[in-house]
Image 1 (cartoon, one colour):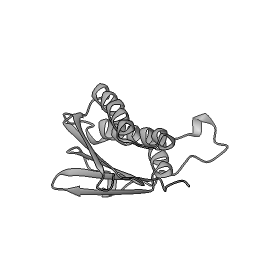
Image 2: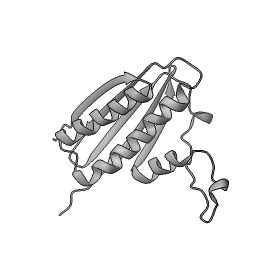
Image 3: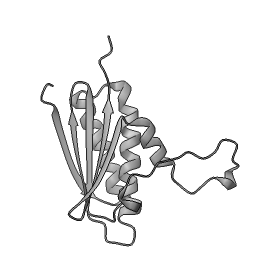
Image 4: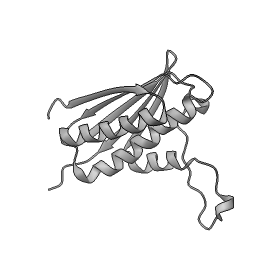
Length: 146
C-alpha cells in the first residue's frame, strides 16, 4: 500500500443517492484495507460531511453531483469531497462547537453537531472554494499499532 489505493465515487446530491454512496464508500474502503477500528469514525464523518452538502450546499438550487475521492495509505486516509453547491458560510469550515452541558432539549440549537463530530473524528480538515467548487478534505491518521 506504499503508493496508496484510490476509490472514486460520484453521485447525485440527494438523500437517497448520498445514503447509497456512503454505504458503497464504506464497503470499498473496508475491502481496500481500512483498519476496522477506524471504519466507524470514517463512516460517521463521511456521512456528516456528505449530508451537509446535500442539505446546505444545494439548498434552494438544483442538486448536482458530489464527487468523493478516497486515498488510503498504510497509516492514513484522505477523503476529498467536491461539489458545485453554495460555499460554506464565510468560506471556512464551521468550528462545530458543542452545546453546553446541562442545556435542556429546548435550548439546544438546530444542527451544528455534525461539524463537531467531524472535528472530533478527523486528524485534519481543509476547505477551499475553487472555480465555483467546494473542496472539503478530511484526513484520518491511524499510526501503526505495535
